[in-house]
Image (cartoon, rainbow over all chains, first blue to last red; front, side, top):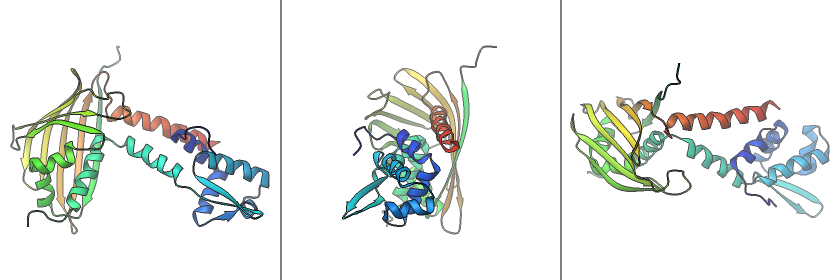
Length: 111
Length: 157
C-alpha cells in the first residue's frame, strides 16, 4: 500500500496524533473491525478510515476486507523501524555494555 | 567571546548483570573476552585490538565502520591508558579517539563494579572533551533530542 519508503520520521508523525495512538493501543489487544473502532473514538467512520490510511502507510497497521467487514490488525514493520531508530541512537558505550551482557549470559566457559 | 571549540559531556550508564563481580571483571581484564564485547560489533571491521591490562598499560583499537554512516571506511582509532585498576572493583582509563588523522575526543572512562544480591551493578562514567567535527555522544544526543523535540511538537498538536 505504501508507495514511499517508510522512515522513522513518518512513524513518529503517525504516532504523534492521539487518535491514531488510541487506535494502535486498541488493536494491540487484537484485530478489530473498522466500524467497531469508530464507536469508542466518537469520530466518523470516514475519519477513522483516514487515520487508518496513515497508520497503514507507515507499516503500523494492516487492514483486510473479509466479506463485508474490514478488519484491522497490528503490523510489525513500523515498530521494527522505531526499534532500529532507537538502537542507532544508543551511544557506543551502551551498545558495548549490551554486548558485555550477552557475553556474560553465556555458560561459564572456564569450568 | 569566541565560541568554545571544545564541548564537554559526561555520560553515566548503569547496568545490572546476573554474574558476580569476578566474572564481570574477567570480561574487562581478559583481552580475548574484552575484544568480543568492546571491539567486535555489527557493521564494524576490527583491524587491530590489543591491550596490556596493567596500570600504565595501553589499549588500542583500530576499526572501520560499514553501512550507511558518514565515516564509512575511514579508520577510527581509540587509544587508552589504564590509570587505575582494582580487581573486581574498578577500571579507570584515559583515552583519545581519532577519525582518520583527525582527533575528535579525549575522555576519562571509569567502570565501577558493585556486588549485589543477584550479581553485579556496573556503573560507567564517561567524561569527555569533544573537539571540532566530533560525531560524539553529544552530537548523537543532540540528534536524539532534535527528533524527540519533533515528536513533542507532533504530540502537542
